[in-house]
Length: 484
Image (cartoon, rainbow, N blue to C red):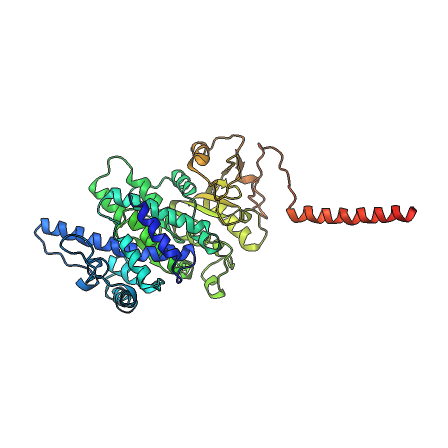
């Protein structure tokens, strides 16, 4: 129903000089979608208040509401072109009046989990990059075709928005850090099995894929009560995100999935000292794909007992610390973590084996993450009991994964089924933790059931050999000519 409107918005953004990447397209679509959503939400709340005989207090002042500046309507319900701004007037209004007004909400809000705070935070972090007021008018008109009134409409919009996030991830560069393949997330959720009433956390939220998919998983449980629904809305999903664009996308993504005031905080998770984490701060379930390859400053590293500049290793320490005793986690990490010989890797592996029950390691194939050449594994563990056995599964879809042939739910179905009983198969096996080397704590994947691994040479090695053979051939030919 709304697919064409999304396509039309993208078509206009592509001819806009101020927007040059998929990240820009997603960012600019996000703030406009948010304001349209906010307008529909306010109208919905006003209707409920009227039916209950109450007066509704709007969040936004009249002149800043969508129906006043973006899409003023005449009596016929159509756009009133005499009142609708366009061109430079529209661009200047958005940049000089609307955004500054919305930014001030952060100071006025009663707390970080209120919708008012989110408004101030979002518009304090992004700016309007649509330089042409005529393009902006066209995009607003297409955005106005979207509606957030029913769950069916929100559901369709959430799928379209997820597609935008996926395209952004597939675009490469830094887009991929915001997107974890949803089939992998759904498989992790099925293994971790979050329950209603548990607090679920992602300290590296990105586009909030883990939180959104967890909401989908739990909201489909049969027999949900009104209290359960309120719990899911207000006291279940928590996240932190450092980057401004990712924060905005996470908020919008959770809203589209049906969570009205997402508990996402815009902060650097790693700036929190582990020693300051109290029992009240801890979570029942943690699922995350923390950024790897990044480097944190020395003052940030001071917050952690195992000092390292590697972002992912700091996040792993944070997750272990902030998980409740008996809590469950599913964490994506670079596969080299399992065998790296540096001090931080060794100590972290030791900590996982002694302070947690690291019961499952899922080995993901090359190409699982589009635009990223690294291989990854998923660590599944429970906090508070020592590891006795580790069940490994080597995911092999039987084809090369890529942008046109991505990971799907069927690829992970066997993993989810076998993991439930830790069953052995040609792709899965169990290792006794007592057999792990107590010096290196090496946990690298070595499938005893699979075919013998073939070490394929790199293209450069092949080219080097061809060059060496060419030199050798030239020498042989030169020798023959000498003989003649």
